[in-house]
Length: 318
Image 1: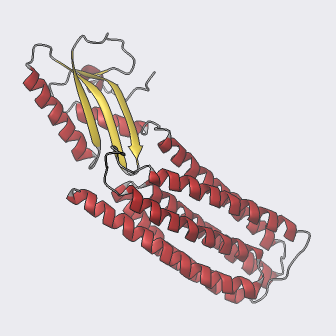
Image 2 (image 1 turned 60 degrees about the horizontal axis):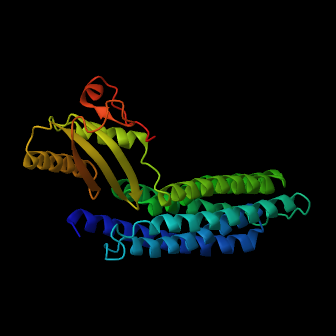
């Protein structure tokens, strides 16, 4: 492993341990608060924290597996373990959202008086403070590592922040203003939000497992970086995908056909160095073609002139 890979691994492992620890503390606090208040909004928060803990444990295992170096049977590494974990997290969260939705709806017909609302509010304030620290750290790690698993876990806890604010609102309205309907209403709101967050996690995981192209802005960056090498005339057949936090980039360079092979090889190496400097730990595969190997209107072909004219956005593969 390179120094960059080792640093990335340390950050990801620390983030998973932090998430599991925080989830455990919140489960204990919210379980006690729910037993004493009877609030369905608090129950929703407890269920979400329990599933967060399960998801964070799945993340911990998946991240450890994803960081395993490539071997003879997995030449591209084990990065997609993160996407598999993301699908598992999404399924768990969707299940919790459906349960909470049903429980909240039933409270309209079977109201339950909330007890010791102040205790519940105190627990939720504690949960918000603790979650804020965790989310800040996870977002830092996600930016540094581009880990799908850490990003998905962070999305859980960011959703928790909004949900906990809703729980406080429900407890305040119910305890101090006698608005019994507030508890199930906020429970339904939380269920819908959690379900939406789960759908986003599932979508991101599915895209990675299906080798979805990297976002257009990333492809634009790749194109711009390639043409920093002044001898590149054009590029075509650019294909990109992600595996865990790693980018895999493949493309064809079009070069002066009169150049010797050794020079073409050196140019490709320079382009590879540029891309790996922009995207550390990316895997880059470059093929050299002479200008004229493909027609000028070849789908996805980008020329230096187009880039210089500001029309060098990465084109979709047809």
